[in-house]
Length: 182
Image (tube, rainbow, N blue to C red):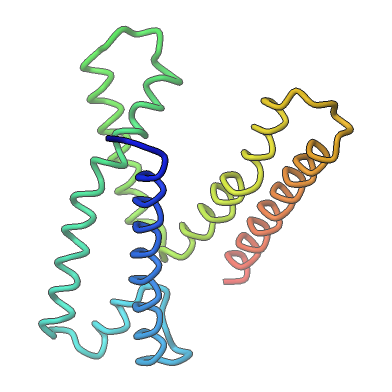
């Protein structure tokens, strides 16, 4: 039965496992290449061990993970596009298929023309993570709480929103300047 405690356990377990996997990958990447680690770790290993069975099995596992993850990611993206742009059209299969094909085309074009995945992670991290961690919680508190605006809690929420916007913009500007320098 769903409960807040079970959801917290699932979340903590998922985040803990993700942290462990990323930490181990970073540790082994650093211990192997020291300061010469590429942003895509498998490319570094493939350069030195192109046909190693372990590297090939990790590539196959990543391929399987991507293949199984894409439908999970496309469902909310397609649903959001349909709700925002095509909510006036009642349940059209043609619209559903066209939005799915367009999303797939955009993903393929990004994969072909973005030279390094760190660029994508940088933009996504500077925009969405700052919004999720700082901006949205502050805005939700300001919207839902009925206190006076001058209260310490609401001023703290305003400070959180302003801080999040500043960090997000600063991060995005730094990323763009790094692109220009390259």
